[in-house]
Length: 110
Image (cartoon, rainbow, N blue to C red):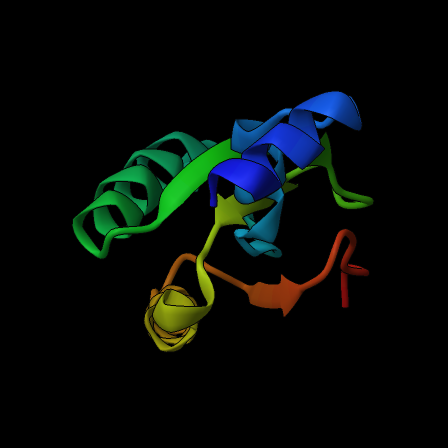
C-alpha cells in the first residue's frame, strides 16, 4: 500500500480525492408546489441523514407552472447504500405534496 501511495503522490493524484471519487453520487429531481418546498427540503435532509446518505447539493429551479418548483438533489451514495437511496426515493414519491420524483439531472413537468 505504501508503494501505491508513493506512486499516486508522484503522479500528482491526491489519495483522498481519488477515494472520494469512488463513492457514488446520484441525483434526484423532486417536483412539488413552491410553498411546500421548504418543509419538504428539511424533511429530505433529515430522512437522508438518518439513512446514512449525505446530501451534498440542492438546486432549486422554477418550474413552467409558477406554483411549482423542482429541487435537484445530489446525494453521496456509496454502492452499499444504493438500496436505501431507492427506499428514500419511494418514500418521497409517496409523500402527498410531491408530484414527481425522477432520477437524473432534469425532469419535465407533466
